[in-house]
Length: 458
Image (cartoon, rainbow, N blue to C red; front, side):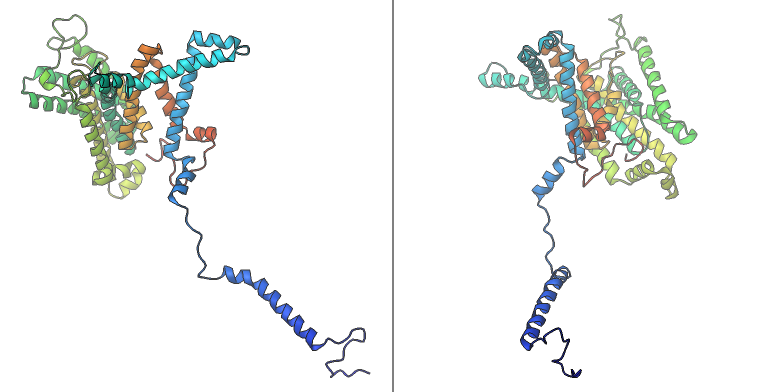
């Protein structure tokens, strides 16, 4: 009979454990418990070292292939160049004929295509930025320094008026208005600047100042009209500005052939020439066309950037553009802001128009003196993300395409209309970042969200 009070007694089928075995079992259980609780203790330690932050170079590489603004813009340029190359090949019958026997001799098609495209884009570069042959000739003494700077001179000449019209459209966008009327405002600006340039007998310095201010005044008047209609009557600015474009164009055509304006020595539609005292001075001599208008364009870019980011009026303008109802509730006069937006936009477009007749592009009024700088300004504003300094860079790009396109047409036989196609393709790809992201498999951007909507983000 077993004694229940005896600790050594137990089940008749088992031997009682010795003291050594009991101690060993207790030690094993303790070790297992410590191992089991070790991860929890280490996870709960407050002084655990945090995960190291990635380096600046690592962040750059991570965002290099992401759908940020810079990458999308750069890849949009690449896509436009590729599509432009395809259009060159398709439009050239000699190159296209080599593809009829591409299976037998593929090298002919490849070589001819490469020769055509490379020469065309090489001439585009030489006509807009730098010509190595001119630089070599300058070093050898066969030509002067003017041919070396001629490509940059042409680019800046074409870019100067585009900066003003691009800023005009961008400023209106930031205020929530779609200014399609930069073309008409530039037209009235060029009319006023030219009239002041050949009708007012003033001394040189004052004459130029009055002519420039007259161009700005003409644009301001043409911008005030849709501004007051929008603010007071609620008339849509897109419709008003488009109609005013036609009014300005036909007014220019009518004015040129009037007595006192038309050149008496000509029978065609051309006005008197602007006096030399009212023309913008050239920066690099008479042989190069770049003039002081590009300096005014840079100054205007800085002024618009300061207005938007540093001034009270700029804050009100951006507030109205973001949410007019909230701005009105906060005490901002939406009516006054709309009028000021269109007046300032008109001033900028008028300055762009005055560059066309006071600079080196033309010295007299003709029906096509303004060209398409107002409509191109819309593309420049979109390409520059409606940011002042972005608009300046976009205008330089468009000016380079225009300057290089002239040489590309002369030396490579490529139609100048292809430059317009390239400009349109660039804007299309930039306006559709989802397409660029899908083509190149870009990751989502971390730091910034692309602003691509006309209704949001301006």
